[in-house]
Image (cartoon, rainbow, N blue to C red; front, top):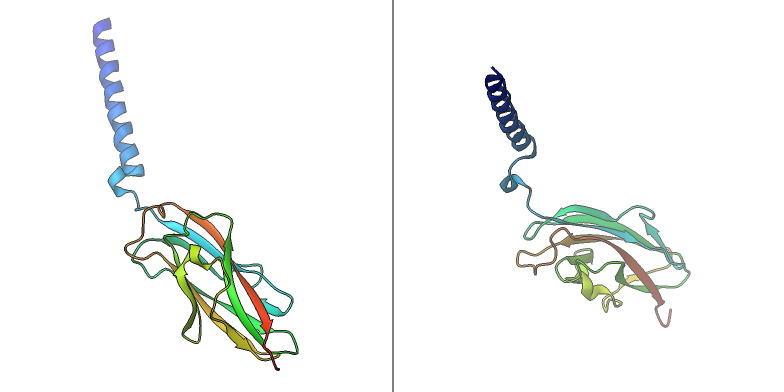
Length: 174
């Protein structure tokens, strides 16, 4: 009689194990069902004395699911000249991490004209292109971050925060 109980107990244990594995696969899915890797980045803006920047304290854009070949994420930032003189405003980016420097691209444009359009890591220096602002004038810049279809490896699961920095230089003779 003891052999029969052990046989039933063993069989029930084996069945319970198969059910547990089947339930885990149903809930967790198979590895092939896992989402493809993606990258994320938040782009903010820093204020300066001569310029009012908006939005301030919240991201210009937040891309949580960047993948190569997709459109990326877009946002806007408004800059306003707070001085009594005309300014030429250039920009650059800064970041604490450099995981996305070679694979993520950034385009910041004013009225469809790119001020910067290059890999994120190439925007650490002040842009040669600038926006001219009269005293009190404001402009809205569009910003877009994306990963090109033929991006180098290294973007997978990368996370980053970058900041747009603005510098206004007085236009001579005004």
